[in-house]
Length: 257
Image (cartoon, rainbow, N blue to C red; front, top):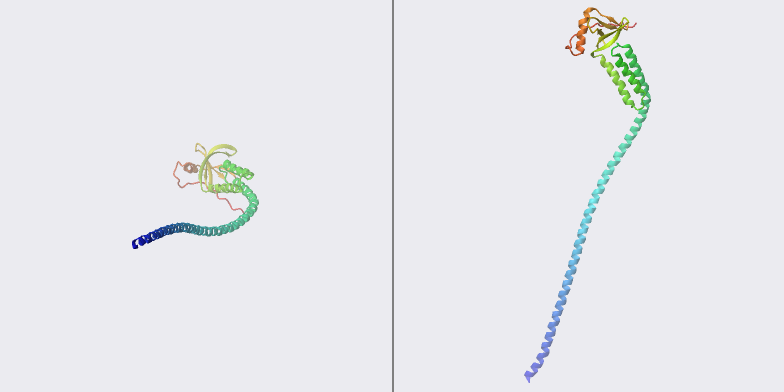
C-alpha cells in the first residue's frame, strides 16, 4: 500500500518541479533580453551624448574663433577710422594746395615771361659769344611759353635751365669758329671766350689777333704780343694744350656816374 501511494505522490511532484524550472528559465531569458535592451539603449544614449558633446565642443571652438575674428575686425575698423580721418585731413590740405597752385599758376606765367625778356636783354648786352646758340635758346623758350601741352613746371624748369647755362658761361673756357665783322669787313676767325673776362679772336693763319671792345661794342685788333697767348688759349680750349696761366687783354669798364 505504501509504495503505491508513494508512486502516486511522486508524479505530481515531478510535474510541479518541471513546471517551476520551465517558468524560471523563461523569466531569466526575459531578464536577459530586458538587460540587453537596456544596455543597447544605454549605448545609444551614450553615443548621442558623445555626439552632442562633440558638437557642443565644436560650437564652442567656432564661437571662440568668431570672437577672435570680431575682435580683429574691431581693431581693423579702428585702424580704418584713423586712416580715413588722416585722409580727410590730407584731402583738405590738398584742396588748399590746389587753390594755391591755381593762384601761383596765374602769377608764374607773367613771371616766366619777364624772366625770358630779362634773359634776352642780358644776352643782347653781354659779350657776343655763341650768339646763334643763345638766341635760338631764347626763341625756343618763347615758343614753349605759348604751348598749352607743356606743364607749367616744365616751362619753369626750362627757363631756370637757360639761366643756369648763362651762369656757367662765366666759368668756362671755350673756342669756336665764327664769322665776325672787323672794320666793316666780315672775317672768318677762331673765337676764344675766357669766362666773361675776355672775348678774343685769331685768324686761321694766326697772323692777326683781336678782341671785342665792350665799350664800343665792336671788334678791334690787338698788338702782336697777344698772338701767342691767344693761340695757346685756343689750344687749351680745344684740349690740345694743358691748362695753364693765360695772358689775355682785360677791359676795365668805368663805373657809371
